[in-house]
Image 1 (cartoon, rainbow, N blue to C red):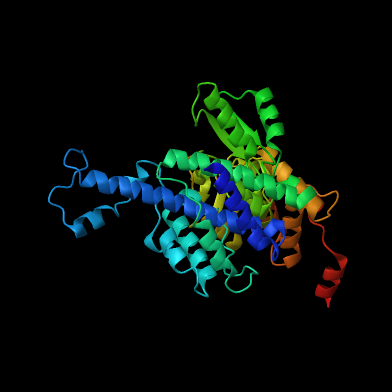
Image 2 (image 1 turned 180 degrees about the vertical axis):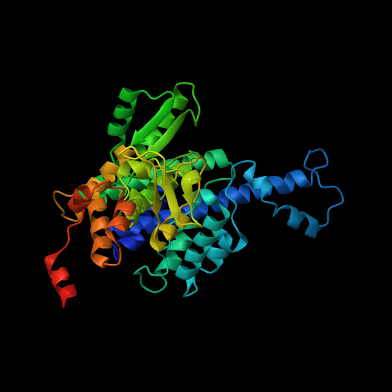
Length: 412
């Protein structure tokens, strides 16, 4: 069966290949396969519940239930959550998408379905790539793609479905990495190399961290290694970073469908950390140590108990900083930014390289922030020092790189 799925998968890819390059079309195809997978798993759980609710000998038996009563009972989300099945709202179920495959707005409908799925399943928030409405495909092509994906069956057993899709996922990534040539190495490392690295690391418990995690192959192989040696999923904590937004989504989805808990940062490249640095002039260490208990959004301040110069201080928060903090979902724990210094350094270095910026460090973001506020001209020296936390004017001057041209313009 798996070989048939792989053949169907590659036929799907070929349908798009004439119109989009490998870097683009892999995301469209994989997104549809993911929706089909979670819809199949949902349908399988629904069929199981139907049988149990109508079986007098089952603990779930719903005595004297009418057809409407059963239909309403089957919409109870708790039945699905208890077996870790994703809840799929009716408009987002595969049958609904397949029925609309020939409609001209099928791309928009798929995007809306993905939005609904993310809304109902917080674990998937920000992961699903909603690009179907703007996909550069000839009329009717996307509908054909939906029809073709409809032929892929994952079965009713969630465990089997997860394993099958995991293998399909790996096959998919490998084939498209080959199609992309050198660029494919950005998101995929050959399975043989990953297996060798994991065997050397021999992770049985603790944490597995990959600062450039690509599509998450190292994490998946680590879990396989643990299970093969008598352990179970969850014996290790997964941490990673990935600067490319689309690859970040591939990794997050790869882990989500396998039931692996993970922390790959709040969003690709941990952009909030970078923007907060520019908005607040806080040092990297201060940002990474920031706790929600010390953030008062109403008063617009962040209180730092420990700073480089040893003094605690309250950092005023700009309107943009407030927006950034409000956009960060609060996970378990108290830290604002669930990112490690090592991963942040790797992401920042990669971003500078891609932007062709040389000799630029994270600390330079603090310089930039203070200079921006100084150039505005509406802050006094004492106010600037309060923002930056500097004790002396001499130190503050080192961080304010005022441009003579702008000063001349202000002089009139």
